[in-house]
Structure formats: C-alpha cells, structure tokens
Length: 428
Image 1 (spheres, rainbow, N blue to C red):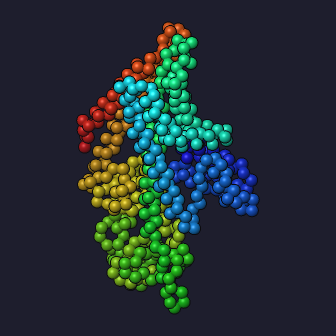
Image 2: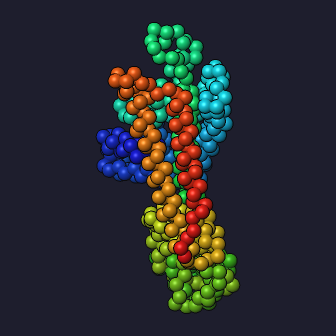
Image 3: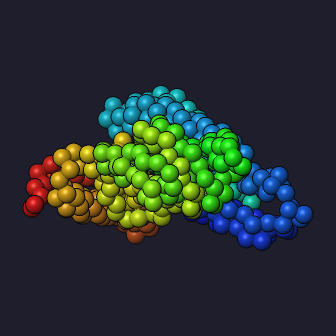
C-alpha cells in the first residue's frame, strides 16, 4: 500500500462483499483484519478481491510468518534496485539538462529506463486504481511524469508539431526522472522503516520457547508450548528458556532477565517468586506453576505495545516501542535489540542526553519548516507562471532556463540552511 487511501480502498471493496461482517486495514503495519462468515465467503474469495485491487494478501498462521517476511524483504530489495538504477541515470539527466546541455536524444536514452523500469510500480498500481474508479498517489505520479516524458519525446523527435505556435520546443526529461527517483526513495525509506519494526518483533518472537516439559500424571513430558494450560506444573532445566509467566513452586536458581529488563546481572529466584516467559534459567532445576499463558504473558503483551510518540529505554521490553515510536532513544548500556531499535543511542548512558537530543530535534524541526516554506514559495510563484498565468496579460512565460536557476537556488538554500545545524550548541 502506498498511502492511506489504499487502505480505505481495500476496506471499501471488502465491506461490500457478501459474508464480510467487519474490516479494518492497518496501513502502517500493512495488515488487514477481517471478520467474516465462512459459509458465505472464504479466505480464497477475500484474497481474490484484494489481489484484483493490485495487492498481495498473505495469511498469517500455520508457519507462514517466515514466508511473509521473505516476501516483504523481496519487495524491499526490488524497490531498492529500482531506486539505485534510477538515481544512477537521473544524476546525468539532471546535470545534462541544467549544466552541460546534452542533446535531447541522449537525455531521452538516459530517461527512458527510469520512466518504464523505475516507474513500473506506479504504472501498475495506477492502472489497477483507474480500473476500480479510484485515484491515488500512483495515478498522480504516473500522470505528471508521463506528461513530461511524452511532451519531451515529441519535442525531441517531432519538433515540427510546434512550428505553428510561438512556443519553442523544450524537453523536460529531468522533471520526469527526478520525480520518479525521489518518490522511489521515499517508498524505499518507508518500506525499510517498516521492515526494521518487523525484524524487532521477529527477534522478540524468537525468545518464545516452542517446547516445554509439563507434568502429565506422574511424569514430565515434552509438549508444544501452545498446549500448556493455566495451573500446569512445568519443569525448567538449566539453560532453558521459561515458556510461560509463572511462580516457582520448587527449587532455587538464578534467572537471566537481561533481555527483558536490560539489567546485566542475574537474579536469584526462590519458591514464591515470579518468573517470565523468554527469560533463561541459569544453574539449577526448578518447577513452576503456569499463571499466564499465550497472549497473556508479559512478552506477548510487549510485542503488542502500543505506538508511542517518544520512547526512552534499554531493555527488550522497550524494543517494540523504540522501533515504532516517532523518536526512539536507546541507552548505550542496554540490550542489543533495544539499541538496534532506537533512532538515537545515548552512548554514555547520561540521561541529560535525552534533553539534548530533544533540543536538537526541535531545532531541526524548525529548520525543516523553513526549508518547506521556501520550497512552497518557489512552487506557488513558479508553477502559475510556468503554466502561463501571466501570458494573457503580459505575454510572459517562464523560460526553462530560469526555472532551472530557481530550482538550483532553492536546493542551495535548503542545503545551506540545513548546514547551520552544525553550529548549533545545546544549552544543557
């Protein structure tokens, strides 16, 4: 899905199908939750509806999680490859248009792969959107880049078309190439961010044991963790991960809870103490009574942690929130998963660094606002002139050369304004 409208489109199509009770599409997580009547509609039917819209549906459960993650990774690599090829070609197109003034035919040869290889995902999704009487970002990108490309091709190979007008044939290959390249970059960054969150969740899931020794009659037998019931007595040997949240009823041992709490030291646990799923029994055999199982355990609830705006943490319990937060700040002394999940890592563990980071973030945000302001002013003034708004009154059209100068100046301003952050000094 490329935008929130995609999610709404899927919801609209599914809710109209016979047998669908309720639909919720989560754009951020790229998941769809469907409540349906199996006797009226099947998963196969639901899958067909979604795939007719141009999306791929993969059903969770029954060991398919790995396949789903592999498909996401493959999609990320595909976008990355299309972006890299596009950016390699877009740089000479831009320089050839603005600086070296290459012949249009060379710009055509450089831009065409970007247009149809780099832009293929947009064309594909735009076609499916139009077929279902829907317009989204893909139709916008396809329309504007195709217009610039086709006009440039006509100017390059059929300039006589413009002979009866006062308009000099111009080419805008750079516009098409740059737009496609930048949108691909945006899609790549978005997919990579989602992939990062997904990887963190998968690492958390890997901490959940698959088998446990549970008392059945007079013996302890190995059974899948999913079959453990509340109140079951479980035997935990040294070096084994604890499969549920429970209470020690026999034995004393040291428990490694570092992946959960971020603390490097082990804790001695005795009869009556609580232990948690995913933690490791270190040195002695213990028996525990299962108090919380399945989705009720602390680890399962951590995996499902709501999205937060700013998150500071050091333990595995903080990792999902760090990955999903708008700004995740990890302590350098924390666990590997927490550090990998954070956007900012405080190397020395000094909590004042949080305030410094937030202060720098605020300054950066102000700089971004100024950069956007300049970009909008440039477009607000330039686009009407380029479209001929002044021509009926003053006979003025925006020469592409001046447009190029304005664009270059806009870029120089944005970069220069951003470089001022290097001189910024925190107050703490």
